Length: 188
Image (cartoon, rainbow, N blue to C red; front, side, top):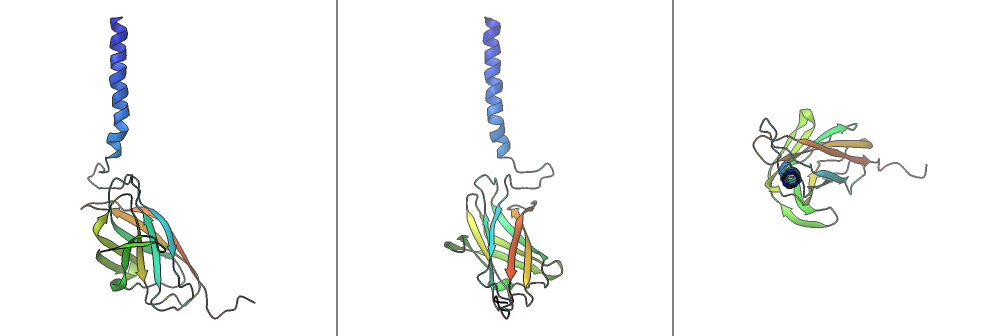
């Protein structure tokens, strides 16, 4: 009987340890080299523009991201890299903005710490002044000088970075925007 009691005591301790193990690991988002990463990265929910005709000046592109409650780390920075399109789209750094919520349900405005374009790499980086906490949905509004002059599909790779000194960016999706030549007729 003593062996059975000892067995069940050991089984209880091991089971309790195994039950707690995933909860401890779930909080760990620092890699072995000290790099901080998301446990579950943000998700690109949508990419849109209300200005889909070519050549429109000062057009805005909206990228909505959802930071899951299980992200493990807040969102600090987002990069956009144009990976397809006939022309390189240039963004206006000073008119970039962000807010909580979606394009159609805008919440409070979010302060940006830095906005930087890298023309040679066709990359645009947005850094939040205060990191976006897990469980939030945010939209970043990129303003162009002009929509492309040539119609077609333009794709943007989106990467998210957690807060911290040494972080690992994680690819979270491709934003797709399509532009139409406003001078052509749909009746052809």
